[in-house]
Length: 266
Image 1: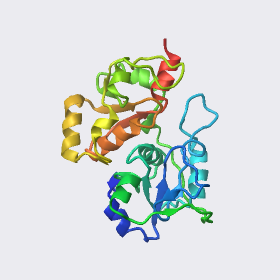
Image 2: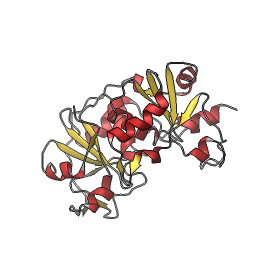
Image 3: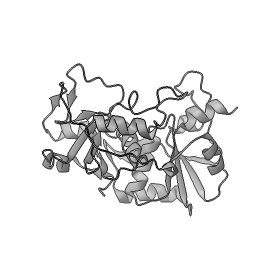
Image 4: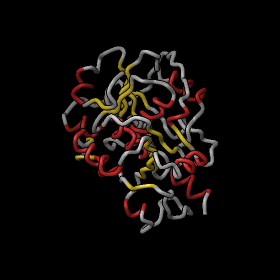
């Protein structure tokens, strides 16, 4: 099983490995305009192909069947080694990484620093073009313990052995500013604590394990389970990535996050 993070030098050295599949999980990207990519990258469309688009809330977890079909269409095999990046550094790539884990795939890592870090080192960039990809044989196995929903998070908020960490900004967590989603009320999940995902970075890359451990150790305090929330289930996965990097286990992402919770409560 690969570590949760690989750096751009590792990817550049392994770019031509036939087992390595590079996925671009940038949100709201189009591949029809010759947009730039790391060579060999395939577009992982979180919003349209790897979410339940019929669900009430954005970026909702797809079914295992949908995930399997779309992953196979990207050429994913059971023995593939997947590296995921996005154009912000680490943002939506963490969501794609957590989705693969949720559907039972272990050999997957996030590219630390993403496309900005790749460019910083002056590595080759090319553009998307129409390519035929052989279908893969990936088999999805849903692991429900890695995701929770409204009823589950209500139970977790009452559990003294569980800590809910909210990745939104301090201003949103403290209800100082409006939520960016129109009509969504301000608020927080009961008994949750705030850990803005932006505090986990040095520039585009995650802070060192030692720095991350100091951040988490100041918050966790003898808890056996960590549940991560945010606005709509995207940046919560960045907290899950950082916690995994630190060696924490028993981690859960709240799929609907505050968009669901704030809508379904008064």
